[in-house]
Amino acid sequence: MRDDLDALAGPRRLGPPARFGHVVMPTPRSCPICIAAEFIDVERVIASTHTLDIVVCTGCGLVYVNPMLTNAEKDAVCPAVRQLHRSRAFEKTDDSALAHAQRRLQRCIDLITPHVRAGAEVLEIGSGDGAMLRFLKDIGARPTGIDIDAASAASMREAIGVPILAGAFEDIEFHGKKFDAVVLVHLIEHFFEPVAMLRRIRDLLKPGGWVFVETPNIMRPKVGPRRVFSLAHNYHFSPRTLALAFHKAGFACTALREFRRDSIQIVAHAAADAALPLPMVEPWQEVIAAIKRYQRRYLTTGQFIWRKLPWFKERLMYQPRRMLSGMQLRDWLVNPRIRFKPDGAPALVRAQLAS
Image (cartoon, rainbow, N blue to C red; front, top):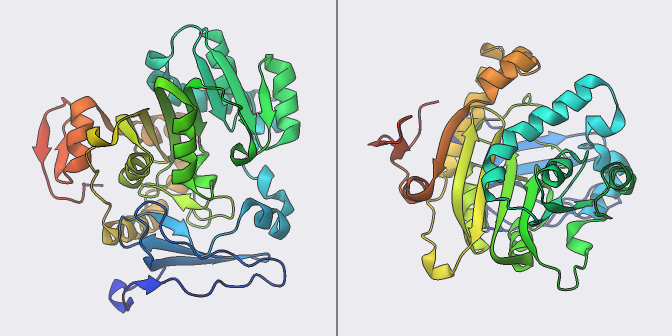
């Protein structure tokens, strides 16, 4: 990232895509949320097999890779890319890997459980180690999984005894099948067209259906600076840009949780366009400032040590920084100066929250 924001000459427009050797030609992108074609450079990641240019949209604050590789192009550049996020519980059977999967599940279920009724048909996209599918089956739902990795899908299908489809969500045909809910945990950031995929999910929902999404929070990352931007992730959302993506796809956000580090969780229901207030954008200057602040504090606060220790991780990283629902969430999304106190009472503050 450039050290001096004043050195930025202003927003850059889409230009010819960079060529990766003689293999692929990445696709230059406009922002999928606000369709803006102007962006500011954030960082360039250079690896032996590829180069990633990370930009932030000046229209809404979304951080994304531009130009961007399709899944097929990623496979050509780095055949192992599909295994970058394969669950440790799939590769190993030791207690630590299984405990990791269980802790990750526990951080999701309190937002999901109130919405799941007995017999509900729930689709999990990116089912991985099967922990979520197993949980949904245990509480009386009828889950179905999708996993891009055929070996993982076959293994979990046999172990759990629920349908798991192998392939990319974009390519699978459902032939009119509808679901009560769809769950995506650390997946939306991988899509080439996240808003289009959310619209497809909306079309798969029954009346009253809902979706749960968890994704890394670019405003408060967990991993080290060298790992924040990787070939696997096309998009890097903040709470507001994720809410904007839902809005664009025709959803109303009904619950939002932001942890002190790592991730954002949102529950959203399909809604009529007229019922959707437009969430405020994330100013791109604040996004860049948050990334720079994180890069400094990752070392000075010892995050590179305590993020790997389960006791500290659960008590320092995965404590909610913000938990909103109903009218509180609606008010916060449309007013950037509202911050809710722990007791739920709103307080007007500066647009940039205290870290």
